[in-house]
Image 1: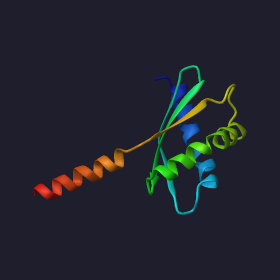
Image 2 (image 1 turned 120 degrees about the vertical axis):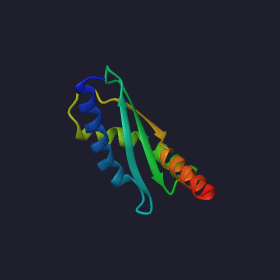
Image 3 (image 1 turned 90 degrees about the vertical axis):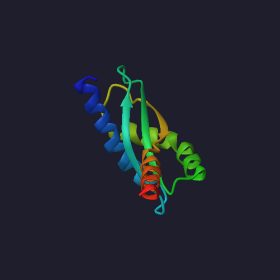
Image 4 (image 1 turned 30 degrees about the horizontal axis):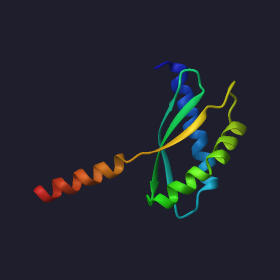
Length: 106
């Protein structure tokens, strides 16, 4: 991956985090764990961890995607703002499951 794409990924993650803070309820913790932007900057996949994790929270986040896209466009200076796609990051759940299994086997 190029240095430029790495910089864009970091910028998108930071700015999306700021936009999401304003759009999510105070009872929800949203963490952007990774951003993967295409080489032409047309698309970006945003891996998001949400606590509490529920389908209702995810549905709400996806409903707010146009607002996230607009908020991001107003905060960054790129030739084009990548079209966002949100994906659920479940790595934390995997870690919890592994820890539970290891705890049971000890």
